[in-house]
Image 1 (cartoon, rainbow over the protein chains, first blue to last red):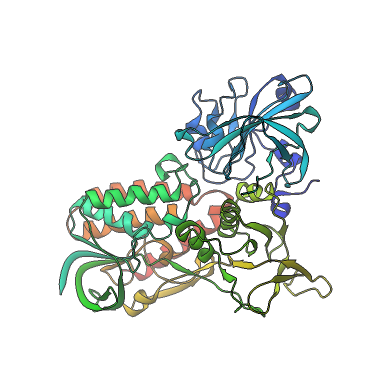
Image 2 (cartoon, rainbow over the protein chains, first blue to last red):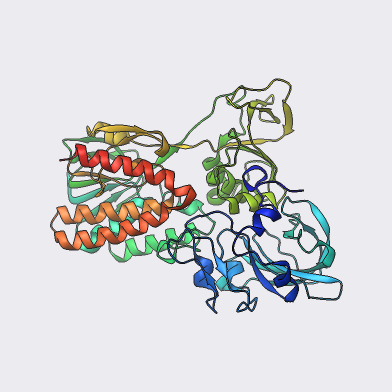
Length: 168
Length: 366
């Protein structure tokens, strides 16, 4: 399923590929990277100030789209919880022989627990596969934006974006 | 009669920031709000704000509210809560009703109106059924009163308010059956729409609500497609089961006090309608009355805070607490910050409308 951001609400892979921060296939396949899905010029730059290695740049004016030096990114995840738009995650194509991993921001309760099997969803909210929760981090600095890491089959590498909300 | 240097009506983001700036400069400030708690809409904003660090980006609105209240307390600003301002005369006198029983007159050398805005309604058959409410009302219920208005919600309006409230309804445990937008393209920030879309919420562009269906309360909502001239397309009706219908169809500035004071107005649709004409100091055509926040044009909490600061600085300068040079330096800092918030594809329309207003202000205000 694809479609434009202003129609479906979600950016298509084409729109993402055309944005300056989205990793190339080659960059994805090298190892864990921060993926910034920010395709609209809005006045916002916490990603830039959150990066401990200073590899994310927005600059002036603050409506610039963020750019990231993926060679310098160590996929620490600081930007994932800092982005007010919940538009950044870490993806690792090399996690296992048949599996990838994703660490995404998650602001729903209850939180999943390590070991839980969850439904991995795409940008349109459709379930694409099952995944296993590896860890859930919610330190004080994240201010209640938890970062959930899920392992899932590599064939769904690009589609995966989050998990289905757990029932209250 | 209570006398003060500066009376500020409305203790939301604009009013609080105005009070803090003016009090810091040395002015005697009285901040008046009709609600039981100060903060305006900030305590309903449980999401992280956008902007830069200077705009408190990445901080949740409710935490910004707490910070502002702490500063208000530390500075010893006099705050009257539960106090409605019902009249404004002679450019200086406020008629205030405190706690619904006690009437009091306040004479202020300067007045800042930071009264905010009210939600627009939408008329359709069934609009009067219980379960139809403003998105702001739904947000108050879930984030302030902690009451879920319903289990399954349809939201009308895909601007940031509609999308953010829909997200917060999901967080509160409701289901969102649809977000409906009359225009062919979604209005809100893409990062907000992406967030609710990945949670499975469908968007219906070029659609509107045809009617709300239900005997005692909303049981379903009928949508219909709109053509390019916004006419309903027969045969495209569809019924969604829902017990709540949230209207996020824009805001109108609350301008009554400015009208009463005799301020001159202009009609600026991009900023919400009739607005008191003001200049870059936030001064109206009544020389001792300033405006800030949504009353000066509907924008966001972050712009409201900056406008409040501007009004506070300029009122304090008028009162002699800041030199002209100090006020100018502080104002230009604030303007830089405001311009950053009004840039980009979303901000430029507001920037243009605001520039028009400021040109008008310069022309009309001697």
